[in-house]
Image (cartoon, rainbow, N blue to C red; front, top):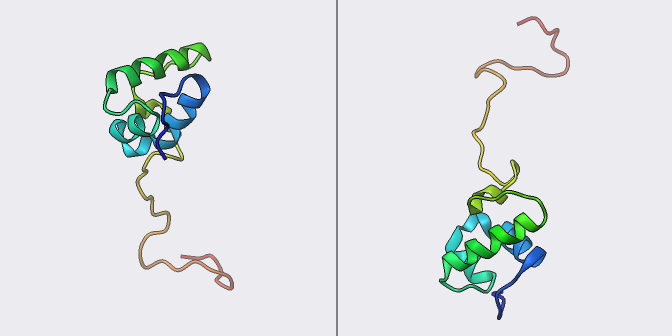
Length: 89
């Protein structure tokens, strides 16, 4: 649900972080800034500076868990590893 008034401080940071994956349009709207993206970015940058965090863009708020990652296949196709196997490949 969108905030009826523009959020500030930690509330703004929390809202922006929670909606960062959806992009600036959604984050700004839900944090109470509507389509005023420049004001949203300015207030977010100030809020982050106040707690000692440098943010240059909205995606800087995403953690490694939030970011999409490539799938790494550890076992080569066709190799079966499981209990009862002697481990010799």
